[in-house]
Length: 132
Ligand SMILES: [Zn+2]
Image (tube, rainbow, N blue to C red; front, side, top):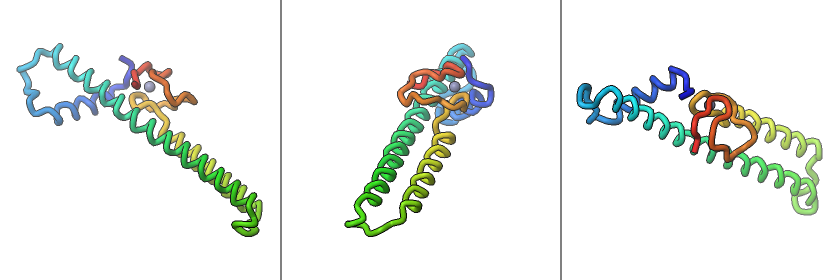
């Protein structure tokens, strides 16, 4: 498949460490390779699910804060006069943090490339790794 060598070595090491039953000589080399590939795929899917939940959470939090800030600005009767500049400054900060987080989080677990705007994508369009 399309992953780079570093990723494959990492998960092979994890797989051997996770499974004490896997002793050299018991499985043929072909069995071992296909088992390693399964665990590699499973690990990619698991990491993708984590990244996806973090991304959804970040979207919700960012939207919530921006909406709250807009409300705070509108309802000066409730929250007092808060300078419009301060509110829009805070909104820019929230958007900046969100973009930074997305650039760090929203990447393919296999090739580490940016995944693009589709939150529900099933395949990495860079390396073809199955994500779901
Ligand atoms: Zn990829």
